[in-house]
Length: 416
Image (cartoon, rainbow, N blue to C red; front, side, top):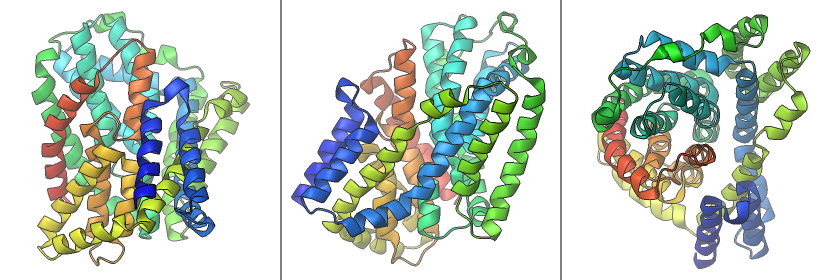
Protein backbone atom coordinates (compact mmCIF):
# COMPACT_ATOMS: atom_id res chain seq x y z
CA UNK A 1 0.00 0.00 0.00
CA UNK A 2 2.85 2.41 0.89
CA UNK A 3 4.56 2.24 -2.53
CA UNK A 4 1.30 2.65 -4.44
CA UNK A 5 0.24 5.58 -2.23
CA UNK A 6 3.57 7.38 -2.53
CA UNK A 7 3.65 6.99 -6.32
CA UNK A 8 0.11 8.34 -6.55
CA UNK A 9 0.73 11.33 -4.25
CA UNK A 10 3.99 12.32 -5.98
CA UNK A 11 2.47 11.92 -9.47
CA UNK A 12 -0.60 13.97 -8.54
CA UNK A 13 1.58 16.66 -6.92
CA UNK A 14 3.56 17.12 -10.14
CA UNK A 15 0.38 17.04 -12.25
CA UNK A 16 -1.09 19.86 -10.17
CA UNK A 17 2.03 22.03 -9.80
CA UNK A 18 3.53 21.38 -13.27
CA UNK A 19 7.08 22.45 -12.27
CA UNK A 20 9.13 23.93 -15.13
CA UNK A 21 6.08 23.51 -17.40
CA UNK A 22 6.24 19.72 -17.11
CA UNK A 23 3.25 18.47 -19.13
CA UNK A 24 0.51 16.60 -17.25
CA UNK A 25 0.63 13.64 -19.64
CA UNK A 26 4.39 13.29 -19.30
CA UNK A 27 4.13 13.32 -15.50
CA UNK A 28 1.34 10.73 -15.46
CA UNK A 29 3.25 8.41 -17.80
CA UNK A 30 6.39 8.70 -15.65
CA UNK A 31 4.28 7.73 -12.63
CA UNK A 32 2.87 4.77 -14.56
CA UNK A 33 6.36 3.60 -15.60
CA UNK A 34 7.57 3.82 -12.00
CA UNK A 35 4.51 1.86 -10.80
CA UNK A 36 5.17 -0.81 -13.43
CA UNK A 37 8.89 -0.95 -12.64
CA UNK A 38 8.27 -1.43 -8.90
CA UNK A 39 5.66 -4.13 -9.48
CA UNK A 40 2.79 -2.01 -8.14
CA UNK A 41 0.98 -2.80 -11.40
CA UNK A 42 1.55 -5.52 -14.01
CA UNK A 43 1.54 -5.44 -17.79
CA UNK A 44 -1.87 -7.12 -17.66
CA UNK A 45 -3.10 -4.22 -15.48
CA UNK A 46 -1.86 -1.78 -18.13
CA UNK A 47 -3.93 -3.60 -20.76
CA UNK A 48 -7.00 -3.56 -18.48
CA UNK A 49 -6.65 0.19 -17.86
CA UNK A 50 -6.11 0.93 -21.55
CA UNK A 51 -9.29 -1.01 -22.34
CA UNK A 52 -11.20 1.07 -19.77
CA UNK A 53 -10.02 4.54 -20.85
CA UNK A 54 -9.33 4.39 -24.60
CA UNK A 55 -12.91 5.21 -25.62
CA UNK A 56 -13.22 8.10 -23.16
CA UNK A 57 -9.87 9.55 -24.14
CA UNK A 58 -10.44 9.40 -27.91
CA UNK A 59 -13.92 10.86 -27.41
CA UNK A 60 -12.47 13.77 -25.45
CA UNK A 61 -9.87 14.52 -28.10
CA UNK A 62 -12.52 14.39 -30.83
CA UNK A 63 -14.86 16.75 -28.96
CA UNK A 64 -12.03 19.23 -28.38
CA UNK A 65 -11.05 19.09 -32.08
CA UNK A 66 -14.67 19.81 -33.01
CA UNK A 67 -14.78 22.65 -30.47
CA UNK A 68 -11.54 24.14 -31.80
CA UNK A 69 -12.83 24.11 -35.38
CA UNK A 70 -16.12 25.71 -34.33
CA UNK A 71 -14.14 28.30 -32.39
CA UNK A 72 -12.05 29.07 -35.48
CA UNK A 73 -15.14 29.81 -37.58
CA UNK A 74 -16.55 32.11 -34.87
CA UNK A 75 -19.31 29.81 -33.55
CA UNK A 76 -18.68 30.38 -29.83
CA UNK A 77 -17.92 34.07 -30.16
CA UNK A 78 -21.21 34.47 -32.04
CA UNK A 79 -22.99 32.63 -29.20
CA UNK A 80 -21.34 34.84 -26.56
CA UNK A 81 -22.29 38.02 -28.41
CA UNK A 82 -25.86 36.79 -28.92
CA UNK A 83 -26.06 36.09 -25.19
CA UNK A 84 -24.86 39.61 -24.41
CA UNK A 85 -27.30 41.22 -26.86
CA UNK A 86 -30.23 39.22 -25.45
CA UNK A 87 -29.47 40.68 -22.01
CA UNK A 88 -30.35 44.15 -23.36
CA UNK A 89 -27.76 45.70 -21.06
CA UNK A 90 -29.20 44.23 -17.86
CA UNK A 91 -26.29 42.98 -15.70
CA UNK A 92 -28.22 40.29 -13.83
CA UNK A 93 -29.76 39.00 -17.05
CA UNK A 94 -26.30 38.83 -18.65
CA UNK A 95 -24.98 36.95 -15.61
CA UNK A 96 -27.75 34.34 -15.87
CA UNK A 97 -27.47 34.06 -19.67
CA UNK A 98 -23.70 33.56 -19.45
CA UNK A 99 -24.26 30.67 -17.03
CA UNK A 100 -26.87 29.13 -19.34
CA UNK A 101 -24.48 29.48 -22.28
CA UNK A 102 -21.81 27.71 -20.23
CA UNK A 103 -24.29 24.95 -19.40
CA UNK A 104 -25.10 24.48 -23.10
CA UNK A 105 -21.44 24.39 -24.14
CA UNK A 106 -20.50 22.04 -21.29
CA UNK A 107 -23.31 19.62 -22.18
CA UNK A 108 -22.52 19.46 -25.90
CA UNK A 109 -18.76 20.09 -25.97
CA UNK A 110 -17.70 18.70 -22.56
CA UNK A 111 -16.58 20.56 -19.47
CA UNK A 112 -13.01 20.90 -20.71
CA UNK A 113 -14.28 22.40 -23.97
CA UNK A 114 -16.19 25.01 -21.98
CA UNK A 115 -13.09 25.80 -19.91
CA UNK A 116 -10.69 25.99 -22.86
CA UNK A 117 -12.85 27.64 -25.50
CA UNK A 118 -15.53 29.73 -23.82
CA UNK A 119 -13.52 31.27 -20.96
CA UNK A 120 -11.14 33.42 -23.07
CA UNK A 121 -14.04 34.58 -25.28
CA UNK A 122 -16.17 35.68 -22.31
CA UNK A 123 -13.16 37.34 -20.69
CA UNK A 124 -12.43 39.33 -23.85
CA UNK A 125 -16.05 40.49 -24.11
CA UNK A 126 -16.13 41.56 -20.45
CA UNK A 127 -13.02 43.63 -20.96
CA UNK A 128 -14.60 45.29 -23.99
CA UNK A 129 -17.63 46.03 -21.81
CA UNK A 130 -15.22 47.71 -19.35
CA UNK A 131 -16.38 45.72 -16.33
CA UNK A 132 -14.37 46.15 -13.12
CA UNK A 133 -12.12 43.36 -11.83
CA UNK A 134 -14.61 42.13 -9.19
CA UNK A 135 -17.37 41.82 -11.78
CA UNK A 136 -15.07 40.00 -14.21
CA UNK A 137 -14.01 37.53 -11.50
CA UNK A 138 -17.68 36.96 -10.55
CA UNK A 139 -18.59 36.07 -14.15
CA UNK A 140 -15.51 33.86 -14.46
CA UNK A 141 -16.16 32.00 -11.19
CA UNK A 142 -19.73 31.36 -12.33
CA UNK A 143 -18.52 30.15 -15.73
CA UNK A 144 -15.89 27.90 -14.17
CA UNK A 145 -18.42 26.36 -11.79
CA UNK A 146 -21.07 25.67 -14.41
CA UNK A 147 -18.56 24.03 -16.75
CA UNK A 148 -18.40 21.08 -14.34
CA UNK A 149 -21.81 21.23 -12.65
CA UNK A 150 -23.53 21.14 -16.07
CA UNK A 151 -21.40 18.32 -17.49
CA UNK A 152 -24.02 15.70 -16.59
CA UNK A 153 -26.67 15.17 -19.30
CA UNK A 154 -24.84 13.27 -22.05
CA UNK A 155 -22.28 10.49 -21.94
CA UNK A 156 -19.69 12.65 -23.70
CA UNK A 157 -20.24 15.74 -21.50
CA UNK A 158 -17.40 14.68 -19.20
CA UNK A 159 -14.60 12.10 -19.27
CA UNK A 160 -15.94 10.70 -15.99
CA UNK A 161 -19.32 10.07 -17.65
CA UNK A 162 -17.77 8.06 -20.48
CA UNK A 163 -15.54 6.00 -18.19
CA UNK A 164 -18.42 5.08 -15.87
CA UNK A 165 -20.94 4.48 -18.66
CA UNK A 166 -18.47 2.14 -20.37
CA UNK A 167 -17.52 0.42 -17.11
CA UNK A 168 -21.16 -0.38 -16.22
CA UNK A 169 -22.32 -0.83 -19.85
CA UNK A 170 -24.78 2.08 -19.72
CA UNK A 171 -26.10 3.01 -23.17
CA UNK A 172 -26.31 6.57 -24.53
CA UNK A 173 -30.12 6.77 -24.33
CA UNK A 174 -30.33 5.10 -20.93
CA UNK A 175 -27.72 7.45 -19.54
CA UNK A 176 -29.45 10.57 -20.87
CA UNK A 177 -32.84 9.44 -19.55
CA UNK A 178 -31.45 8.99 -16.04
CA UNK A 179 -29.34 12.15 -15.95
CA UNK A 180 -31.57 14.70 -17.67
CA UNK A 181 -33.46 15.68 -14.50
CA UNK A 182 -30.27 15.96 -12.38
CA UNK A 183 -28.82 18.15 -15.16
CA UNK A 184 -31.81 20.49 -15.14
CA UNK A 185 -31.74 20.67 -11.34
CA UNK A 186 -27.98 21.23 -11.36
CA UNK A 187 -28.22 24.15 -13.78
CA UNK A 188 -31.17 25.71 -11.92
CA UNK A 189 -29.69 25.48 -8.43
CA UNK A 190 -26.26 26.51 -9.75
CA UNK A 191 -27.80 29.72 -11.12
CA UNK A 192 -29.54 30.34 -7.79
CA UNK A 193 -26.53 29.76 -5.55
CA UNK A 194 -24.09 31.54 -7.88
CA UNK A 195 -26.39 34.57 -7.77
CA UNK A 196 -26.64 34.37 -3.96
CA UNK A 197 -22.86 34.24 -3.49
CA UNK A 198 -21.81 36.65 -6.24
CA UNK A 199 -24.74 39.10 -6.44
CA UNK A 200 -22.80 42.01 -4.89
CA UNK A 201 -20.30 41.93 -7.77
CA UNK A 202 -22.85 41.68 -10.60
CA UNK A 203 -23.17 45.05 -12.39
CA UNK A 204 -26.67 46.54 -12.70
CA UNK A 205 -26.12 47.72 -16.26
CA UNK A 206 -23.64 47.00 -19.08
CA UNK A 207 -23.15 48.98 -22.27
CA UNK A 208 -23.71 46.35 -24.95
CA UNK A 209 -23.28 48.99 -27.66
CA UNK A 210 -19.52 48.44 -27.20
CA UNK A 211 -19.82 44.92 -28.62
CA UNK A 212 -19.75 43.86 -32.26
CA UNK A 213 -22.80 42.51 -34.05
CA UNK A 214 -22.84 38.69 -33.68
CA UNK A 215 -22.93 37.99 -37.43
CA UNK A 216 -19.76 40.01 -37.98
CA UNK A 217 -17.57 37.40 -36.25
CA UNK A 218 -18.66 34.46 -38.45
CA UNK A 219 -15.89 33.65 -40.92
CA UNK A 220 -18.03 31.59 -43.28
CA UNK A 221 -21.82 31.80 -43.02
CA UNK A 222 -22.40 28.67 -45.12
CA UNK A 223 -20.16 26.62 -42.84
CA UNK A 224 -21.84 28.17 -39.81
CA UNK A 225 -25.23 26.84 -40.97
CA UNK A 226 -23.67 23.50 -41.87
CA UNK A 227 -22.26 23.34 -38.32
CA UNK A 228 -25.75 23.43 -36.79
CA UNK A 229 -26.93 20.66 -39.12
CA UNK A 230 -23.76 18.67 -38.42
CA UNK A 231 -24.26 18.90 -34.64
CA UNK A 232 -27.87 17.72 -34.98
CA UNK A 233 -26.84 14.76 -37.15
CA UNK A 234 -24.00 13.95 -34.77
CA UNK A 235 -26.43 13.77 -31.86
CA UNK A 236 -28.64 11.40 -33.90
CA UNK A 237 -25.50 9.38 -34.61
CA UNK A 238 -24.91 8.82 -30.90
CA UNK A 239 -28.39 7.26 -30.59
CA UNK A 240 -27.74 5.06 -33.62
CA UNK A 241 -24.41 4.03 -32.13
CA UNK A 242 -26.18 3.18 -28.88
CA UNK A 243 -28.63 0.92 -30.75
CA UNK A 244 -25.73 -0.98 -32.35
CA UNK A 245 -23.54 -0.92 -29.21
CA UNK A 246 -20.81 1.16 -30.88
CA UNK A 247 -18.18 3.00 -28.80
CA UNK A 248 -18.89 6.71 -28.16
CA UNK A 249 -15.56 7.61 -29.75
CA UNK A 250 -16.77 6.37 -33.17
CA UNK A 251 -18.95 9.48 -33.35
CA UNK A 252 -17.11 11.83 -30.97
CA UNK A 253 -13.64 11.38 -32.48
CA UNK A 254 -14.93 10.55 -35.97
CA UNK A 255 -17.23 13.59 -35.90
CA UNK A 256 -14.42 15.89 -34.81
CA UNK A 257 -12.14 14.68 -37.60
CA UNK A 258 -14.93 14.80 -40.21
CA UNK A 259 -15.86 18.38 -39.35
CA UNK A 260 -12.18 19.34 -39.48
CA UNK A 261 -12.09 17.95 -43.04
CA UNK A 262 -15.26 19.89 -43.95
CA UNK A 263 -13.86 23.13 -42.52
CA UNK A 264 -10.58 22.55 -44.36
CA UNK A 265 -12.52 22.17 -47.62
CA UNK A 266 -14.09 25.59 -46.95
CA UNK A 267 -10.59 26.97 -46.25
CA UNK A 268 -11.58 28.42 -42.88
CA UNK A 269 -9.08 26.51 -40.70
CA UNK A 270 -5.50 25.29 -40.83
CA UNK A 271 -5.83 21.54 -40.18
CA UNK A 272 -2.21 21.05 -39.10
CA UNK A 273 -2.59 23.82 -36.53
CA UNK A 274 -5.76 22.23 -35.11
CA UNK A 275 -4.16 18.79 -34.93
CA UNK A 276 -1.02 20.21 -33.33
CA UNK A 277 -3.00 22.16 -30.74
CA UNK A 278 -5.35 19.27 -29.87
CA UNK A 279 -4.91 18.08 -26.25
CA UNK A 280 -2.84 14.99 -26.96
CA UNK A 281 -1.30 15.27 -23.49
CA UNK A 282 -4.71 14.30 -22.09
CA UNK A 283 -4.36 10.91 -23.80
CA UNK A 284 -1.15 10.16 -21.88
CA UNK A 285 -2.60 11.78 -18.75
CA UNK A 286 -5.66 9.51 -18.78
CA UNK A 287 -3.74 6.30 -19.42
CA UNK A 288 -0.84 7.14 -17.11
CA UNK A 289 -2.86 8.36 -14.13
CA UNK A 290 -5.31 5.47 -14.34
CA UNK A 291 -2.41 3.01 -14.31
CA UNK A 292 -1.09 4.71 -11.16
CA UNK A 293 -4.59 4.56 -9.62
CA UNK A 294 -4.89 0.89 -10.50
CA UNK A 295 -1.91 0.38 -8.22
CA UNK A 296 -4.05 1.72 -5.35
CA UNK A 297 -6.72 -0.81 -6.30
CA UNK A 298 -4.15 -3.61 -6.20
CA UNK A 299 -3.04 -2.36 -2.78
CA UNK A 300 -6.57 -2.77 -1.40
CA UNK A 301 -7.94 0.80 -1.32
CA UNK A 302 -11.02 -0.16 -3.32
CA UNK A 303 -11.74 -3.03 -0.92
CA UNK A 304 -12.01 -0.57 1.98
CA UNK A 305 -14.24 1.71 -0.09
CA UNK A 306 -16.43 -1.21 -1.12
CA UNK A 307 -17.12 -2.06 2.53
CA UNK A 308 -18.21 1.53 3.24
CA UNK A 309 -20.39 1.69 0.13
CA UNK A 310 -22.02 -1.67 0.89
CA UNK A 311 -22.91 -0.43 4.35
CA UNK A 312 -24.43 2.73 2.84
CA UNK A 313 -26.45 0.67 0.35
CA UNK A 314 -28.15 -1.13 3.27
CA UNK A 315 -29.49 2.18 4.63
CA UNK A 316 -31.95 2.81 1.78
CA UNK A 317 -31.65 4.46 -1.63
CA UNK A 318 -31.58 8.09 -0.48
CA UNK A 319 -28.82 7.57 2.09
CA UNK A 320 -26.87 5.37 -0.35
CA UNK A 321 -27.11 7.90 -3.21
CA UNK A 322 -26.25 10.94 -1.09
CA UNK A 323 -23.49 9.10 0.77
CA UNK A 324 -21.91 7.73 -2.42
CA UNK A 325 -22.11 11.14 -4.10
CA UNK A 326 -20.44 12.95 -1.22
CA UNK A 327 -17.69 10.33 -0.85
CA UNK A 328 -16.94 10.68 -4.57
CA UNK A 329 -17.08 14.48 -4.24
CA UNK A 330 -14.65 14.76 -1.34
CA UNK A 331 -12.24 12.23 -2.85
CA UNK A 332 -12.36 14.20 -6.12
CA UNK A 333 -11.66 17.46 -4.31
CA UNK A 334 -8.66 15.94 -2.54
CA UNK A 335 -7.12 13.76 -5.24
CA UNK A 336 -8.72 14.85 -8.55
CA UNK A 337 -11.86 13.40 -10.11
CA UNK A 338 -10.12 11.35 -12.81
CA UNK A 339 -8.57 8.80 -10.42
CA UNK A 340 -11.59 9.04 -8.10
CA UNK A 341 -14.13 7.95 -10.71
CA UNK A 342 -12.13 4.83 -11.51
CA UNK A 343 -11.56 3.90 -7.85
CA UNK A 344 -15.25 4.39 -7.10
CA UNK A 345 -16.37 2.46 -10.19
CA UNK A 346 -14.26 -0.51 -9.13
CA UNK A 347 -15.56 -0.29 -5.55
CA UNK A 348 -19.17 -0.21 -6.79
CA UNK A 349 -18.79 -3.24 -9.08
CA UNK A 350 -20.32 -5.76 -6.67
CA UNK A 351 -23.05 -3.51 -5.25
CA UNK A 352 -26.42 -4.19 -6.96
CA UNK A 353 -27.69 -0.61 -7.13
CA UNK A 354 -27.43 1.09 -10.54
CA UNK A 355 -28.27 4.50 -9.08
CA UNK A 356 -24.95 4.55 -7.23
CA UNK A 357 -23.03 4.65 -10.52
CA UNK A 358 -24.89 7.86 -11.39
CA UNK A 359 -24.34 9.22 -7.87
CA UNK A 360 -20.63 8.59 -8.38
CA UNK A 361 -20.68 10.59 -11.63
CA UNK A 362 -22.50 13.50 -9.98
CA UNK A 363 -20.06 13.51 -7.08
CA UNK A 364 -17.05 13.32 -9.38
CA UNK A 365 -18.38 16.15 -11.60
CA UNK A 366 -19.45 18.60 -8.87
CA UNK A 367 -17.12 17.67 -6.01
CA UNK A 368 -13.96 18.88 -7.76
CA UNK A 369 -15.24 22.46 -7.58
CA UNK A 370 -14.30 22.54 -3.88
CA UNK A 371 -10.59 22.85 -4.71
CA UNK A 372 -8.58 24.28 -7.62
CA UNK A 373 -7.03 20.89 -8.40
CA UNK A 374 -10.20 18.81 -8.23
CA UNK A 375 -10.64 18.43 -11.99
CA UNK A 376 -8.64 18.76 -15.17
CA UNK A 377 -11.20 21.33 -16.40
CA UNK A 378 -10.49 23.60 -13.42
CA UNK A 379 -6.73 23.26 -13.86
CA UNK A 380 -7.12 24.17 -17.56
CA UNK A 381 -9.48 27.03 -16.66
CA UNK A 382 -7.04 28.54 -14.14
CA UNK A 383 -4.18 28.12 -16.62
CA UNK A 384 -6.14 29.98 -19.32
CA UNK A 385 -6.98 32.81 -16.90
CA UNK A 386 -3.40 33.11 -15.67
CA UNK A 387 -2.20 33.53 -19.26
CA UNK A 388 -4.81 36.30 -19.67
CA UNK A 389 -3.61 38.14 -16.56
CA UNK A 390 -6.39 37.02 -14.14
CA UNK A 391 -5.06 35.51 -10.92
CA UNK A 392 -7.44 33.60 -8.66
CA UNK A 393 -5.68 32.45 -5.50
CA UNK A 394 -5.98 29.01 -3.91
CA UNK A 395 -7.72 30.53 -0.86
CA UNK A 396 -10.12 32.64 -2.95
CA UNK A 397 -11.15 29.71 -5.12
CA UNK A 398 -11.41 27.19 -2.26
CA UNK A 399 -13.53 29.55 -0.12
CA UNK A 400 -15.95 29.99 -3.02
CA UNK A 401 -15.97 26.29 -3.92
CA UNK A 402 -16.43 24.98 -0.37
CA UNK A 403 -19.38 27.31 0.23
CA UNK A 404 -21.32 26.73 -2.99
CA UNK A 405 -20.59 23.10 -3.92
CA UNK A 406 -22.11 21.09 -0.99
CA UNK A 407 -25.67 22.54 -1.19
CA UNK A 408 -25.75 22.27 -5.00
CA UNK A 409 -24.41 18.70 -4.83
CA UNK A 410 -26.99 17.68 -2.23
CA UNK A 411 -29.93 18.97 -4.24
CA UNK A 412 -28.70 17.35 -7.47
CA UNK A 413 -28.21 13.99 -5.74
CA UNK A 414 -31.73 14.17 -4.31
CA UNK A 415 -33.03 14.69 -7.87
CA UNK A 416 -31.48 11.40 -9.04
